[in-house]
Amino acid sequence: MPVTSSRAAVSPSERSPYLPVALAWLIPGAGHFLLGRRWRAAIIFFSVTLMFVIGLLMRGPLFKIGGADLLSRLIQFGGFLGDLACGFLYFLTVWLGYAAPDIAGHNPDYGSKFLVAAGLLNVLAMVDVYEIATKQKE
Amino acid sequence: MHITLNHFEVSIIFALIASVVLGLVTKRTDRERVRYGLYCFGCFIAALFGIGWAMHFLHG
Image (tube, rainbow over all chains, first blue to last red; front, side, top):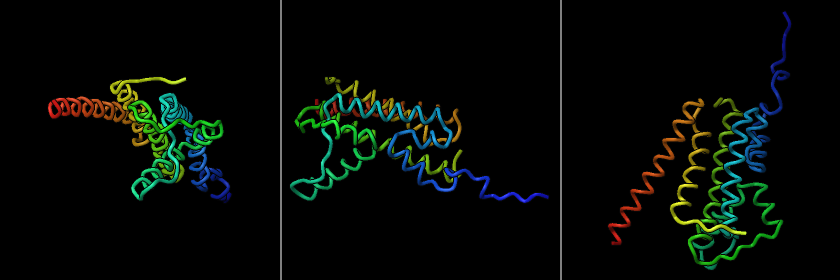
């Protein structure tokens, strides 16, 4: 009876969940794509990108670390993490020199929330990728 | 280039995109995903109108 190695049957993406999760952060939907969930990858990429682009079109300012007092610093840091969770969308935006001013008005205000919400949706997608990679979920 | 949206349009767009992702990542079968996505969208809309009317009556 032939003995098969269980290690040989396991693909690289099944060995460690960290590569798909890191990819999912960097490119929304890429983690699902790597794990063979192509439709879900496409929907996540489209949804997160759409949310982020709408935020940019509404001239939402990106959060920056800093602030005058502790509460402002906490808010700015939390928002910065949300922006950063968008992965390449955030880096591309910063690299292209996007710098919307933080002005009063409901449109820039909603815009900044859309930018952060895009990152938070991507975090949910990363958790989903982790669960799929660790076989907790189909 | 920029767009200007009113509160209602922003809320609907947000509810739509968030519902799609929430439905997609939280459930295990396609049927459950669609149902949960629709449920989330319904909850967002209910909250939108509920809070809107509450603010209308509270603020006058």
